[in-house]
Amino acid sequence: MIDPRLLRDDPDSLRAAQEKRGLSPEVVDRALEADAARRAAIADFERLRGEQKQLGKLIPKAQGEEKAELLARTKALAADVKTAEAAQGEAESDWRDAIYAIPNPAAEQSPAGGEDDYVVLSEHGTPRDFAAEGFEPRDHVELGRILGAIDVERGAKVSGSRFYYLTGAGADLEFALVNMAMDQARAAGFTTMVPPTLVKPRAMEGTGFLGQAADDVYRIEGQDTYLVGTSEVPLAAYHSDEILDGETLPRRYVAFSPCFRKEAGSHGKDTRGIIRVHWFDKVEMFSYTTLEEAAAEHDRLLGWETEWLDKLELAYRVIDVAAGDLGLSAQRKFDCEAWVPTQGRYRELTSTSNCTDFQTRRLDIRGRFDGEVKPIATLNGTLVAIPRTIVAILETHQQADGSVRVPKALQPYLQGREVLEPVTGG
Image (cartoon, one colour):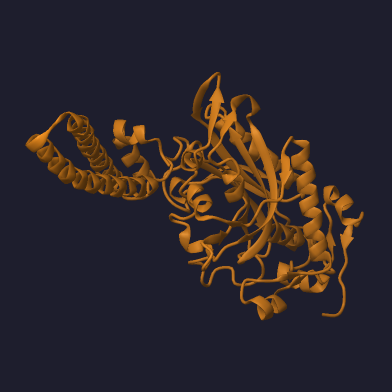
């Protein structure tokens, strides 16, 4: 959540931040009203409670009619105190709901606008010219069939639309990508983790995934738990309700986990293949650091992502995501988009977000610095999302006979194979 002092001291900056995202500033006004009501309710309760305590001190000294009158007043006041306490609790809840509805204000550098208002920061590599090479590129579904690597038909038969099997070379590719990603992260000083993929509501809410993203989340009915859409959630909640030693920052974790998304609102989008699916595996980087170091850490996460994409020998670009497309928790977000030849456009492969102290305030995570306890920042960055990475590799490195050249850096993780060869059967 935002710093409540920002709401009280500079609400106009929050109204401007809402407009930059293309959202109504009304949430700021509602939060201000809720904050005023909450403070009034607290003052009312404390006044009545103080009165009650004073009467309690007088009763032992009183006698006769005076004592009876004091006892009657105490009884009436006790009811008023109980009512005021309930009103305070309701006001606290209303205030919490109101302030939780305010997104993290976008960074000054983030472009204003929505999904199509991003700014391209850099371009890397050159998309292949298949026409110059004399053949028409196959899409990843056809290549997956030829290689015996992807089976979407049986995925749909068993689990429904937007599910798939990775088989043979496809499954080998996943394990190769995961192991290579973990090696890179480990070399950069990350602690490897395999976190739970079922979490309690507080973890989802604390990371901002029960707000505007709630429609995309799978909830387990009857258990009050959720399937995560990214390991960002359990990694952020890992240190919830803790005060971290500032000397240990940054703390960097890298996790492998399955991810589950409803893909709400994506009806008719990317229905072919494994671009947009309900389940996929991912390797995610996560950092806890100081607020002062957060922007520099964001650049480092982006650097590790571009290093990764360079190893895969892909053509890609880096974009600065516009404020209206940031999501609730992010102050700034960079996407790395790889060129997908048969679609003739760039598609998001990885992203990295600076969430500043938005998640740590919700999850009550702080740092101790020379005896002073202060807010800290969280950042996340995808190193490899398996399906889309496989799509980019197959389509980019395909050859005319349906085989696929393996990027040099990936070969040691694929038993030394330089080429994925077509197979027969089905």
